[in-house]
Image (cartoon, rainbow, N blue to C red; front, side):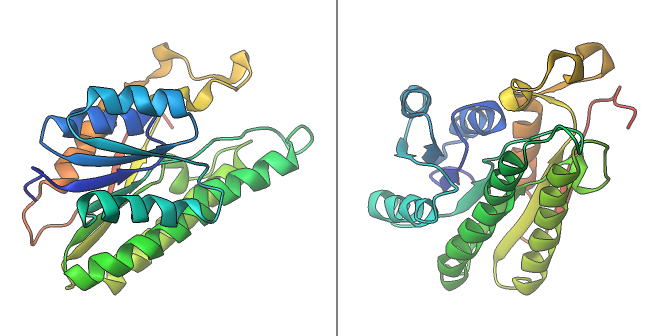
Length: 237
């Protein structure tokens, strides 16, 4: 895919991997529809980019995915790439976990991905081209203690992504999952200090993931990388 002038939706764009991806792909000439809950952070990012519009909203709201796509079509006339990146990571033992926060995480990490995926893929299928990238995780491939609910959301994203890929094979629409390991983002800011990942145990930068997303997108028409796992070289598990 030649990325120049392609229209890309990024959810959860105001920080971390979403922000890094926008900054990197801006250099390739991509135009953006950016989503996040923080209006100020989103507008600050948009001001850095050559062509970007913002849709402030919580992806848990069932109306937000359609609002994002409506904005893309009204501003640019189409959508070429959707990066379902918005997500949170709640942790805790069975005894200490906040069940309401876990269920809210399920809605954001999976339900919103379902809504955006199906809504975006319908026009992509009609136009005979497009690319959907869903944010998964190493935790979508293997389970870890104290993040069982998070594991469940990412295992579900993996299953959804591969099923959609198979359904759309031969249509010109590609679907893939990016699977980061330990990455230096704001995702872990709310964790207790003793449970946070330590740089000495291996952390990669958000831009490392953004570079891999670009790599996925620029493959030849007949090549699809259906999933890409990216972990720090020092990560043992």
